[in-house]
Length: 344
Image 1 (cartoon, rainbow, N blue to C red):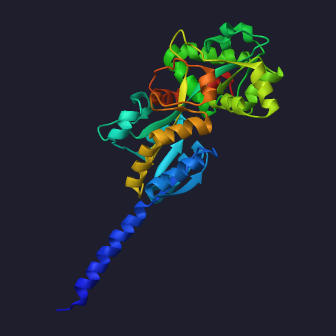
Image 2 (image 1 turned 90 degrees about the vertical axis):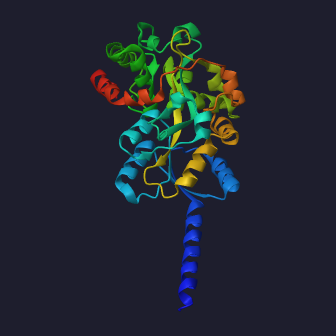
Image 3 (image 1 turned 30 degrees about the vertical axis):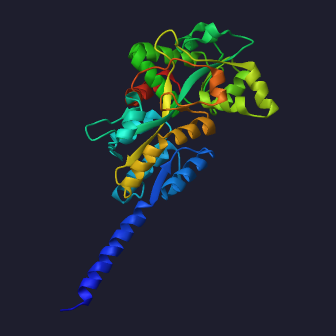
């Protein structure tokens, strides 16, 4: 009998287990979140679990394109995107896999999950932000801007500023309006926005807030966390902007203010699936939800979780209850409407 054979087999088995264990200690993350405050989020996960995070940063569209190009050889384990429409697109293109987790199901409301099947959800919301109207307090009153529909009215001729209509934040808002108003009224509303523009769409949400403060326009759209950043800033120029600009949560008397999400999914070809699911569950934990709120001024996805002082100062509001997956699914039709309306 060759005594070396059992020894070799035992060593091979140990090496295999060690290799699998080592693999479990790494997580490859593709992230569209470009917030410096998220570094602490990732470091805490590593400290708690021993799982190291290797991160690739890109925008939502770039991440989805990369996943498609890499195919089965992709090293990605977890995908973090910052828009419901792009999460829906990734689901439709078969880039994610379902996750069944009692912890996630208990903490993430059903309206903020997508691709739900008996095998689980293909993506999960982790934080929310409201799409609000900012206005020049010297020219307009809160009642002038208490609904999205009013932005297309004659009172705002030459007063409206906005970033590109094709930006995901706007596409999701418009997809929400399509659910509420129907196709004909939504397209008419988009044409009204175009006719009310003070200038061609450009810049980001912070640029729109600054344009209102400077008098370039009277009203604009922004995500809440952009305004909250200015509220928390120590710069005198930012404080001056906050003093000049009012914030309105639209449609409180009807269906509620539109909210979008940052969400996470496990990649279809994840090599470290157990670590990926652990990371998703960690993002829904109390500690991680606090980071979303404190670090980037986002609303936690978990009901009842604490928000920071800037968001508290903005006040409570009624959010719409349209399933976020439906909003994403409306994107192709909305894009056609934008093209017809000349909203670039």
